[in-house]
Length: 273
Length: 348
Ligand SMILES: Nc1ncnc2c1ncn2[C@@H]1O[C@H](COP(=O)(O)OP(=O)(O)OP(=O)(O)O)[C@@H](O)[C@H]1O
Ligand SMILES: [Mg+2]
Image (cartoon, rainbow over all chains, first blue to last red; front, side, top):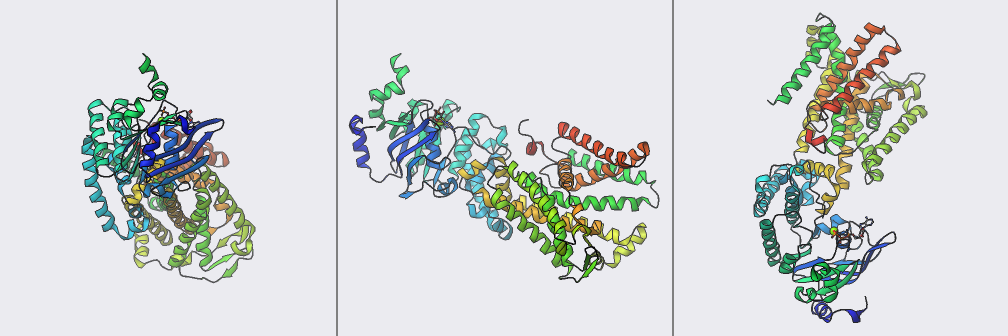
């Protein structure tokens, strides 16, 4: 993308925030002949909600895979909290506070919702075989504390009544909510949410949006992939538009949504109808 | 008591009655029961090890017998024994309890050795690697006779166990009209079984156990939450392997000789059958499964030879019968006798 064709707002937005929590540089991923992601430069500010939007197949999920470390990039670098994490394993990134959810939810089917939450919360040290055997009191205490925290979170997304249900017994929307709460149990500093509202009913959507706002108000950072544009625009502080793997525009929501190319690429059909 | 447990108990009683009954409930009946129970106890210990790896951890291991091979050889070679074509006498190196501990450690080490290269692969590759390892070990045992006694194997080590036999066992054996050495082995096997069963039960209730189940369900999700499945899977493989090593040591006492022909792949599949019968991922499944499996194998053998006369056809037919029963079981009750359906079936 040549810089002359970029909206002026983008340039200033980046210049104003030299210290983003996440930085992607010449990050690309090709599957055979198909370039799924080809990002010149994206910087996620260290506060608020950054929405990553774009049509189906734009490369949003692949970008999440690259950022979280589940897919190795073809080129480029991921910088998180000032450290180049390109070659870190996903678990190491998550331990440092970079946590993601999955578009196709990955709830532990044969564990209960509460157990799902506990897996999220446990510091990996408490899961050590030696601690489990030699320091049972400590691990029991940790489990008890996490249980309370988990219950509170489940209540806030209205699935506390499902705490003892198995993962496989949940509906699609409930799985989304469990995955979201489970990710919060890790105390992330940067949370990547891949379509958290998909399959969630409108009233709960509203609560989720409030939830997301509350999380960022307390200093958390969220990157949000979501097709529910009205809600995205309401919750986002910063928007990045992807199209066929490339950044089409980025900046404040109102500026981006009035960008003609964005309207054509993404909102196109609705806009012209 | 849940309905499932009542059924399990009834099945157990039925097995015992079947064996006793087919031996006329008479004086010799207890003597007929003892070898079946002992074999069941030994294999059940192996079942607990495999259940930890496969039932709880989802690690497919088609070479489980490898752990038993290592356990058996390490133990008997550390005890006073005779080996090789000339039945050469060898001094004991350490007392039996130490030998058993070293045998389990060696088996655990084998788990690490195989796991470090293979654990990152998909679980079906681990299964294949383990088949190969088990066969390689067996062939090695045959081809380095200076250490293992080669095809002649290792003999005359059982005194180490019988020397530890307490008085009361002799008295009890007299009362039951069975051989004291057999009764003692049976007691040791079942005591070991209870110990390892409770150990695994306890472990599965810790956060470590919870993590292991999570890894079995979805490794990627575990990683997305900042936990590494690799170490955990290695630990499960090594721990299950150590229990397999113990089972190998017990098997050595039960057979009273150790040679390469003992540790054939069939043993692995017996143990898989036992775990499946009892209930994959259940606590007492391996114990119950082993009793049922060995009752079926022994008694159907007896039935078949009444019909066909004794011979190879008869002894082969009993495997067919047990095989057919297992296929039926997997179709109609995949969770086995004590398992939970949720642990083995992906969709209801
Ligand atoms: N593992 C893969 N192998 C081959 N192609 C892939 C793979 N993963 C993604 N792609 C391709 O990469 C492109 C981007 O896919 P991606 O899932 O990132 O899109 P997305 O923006 O998340 O779309 P959606 O909004 O539908 O979720 C698509 O064309 C897809 O076919
Ligand atoms: Mg996607």
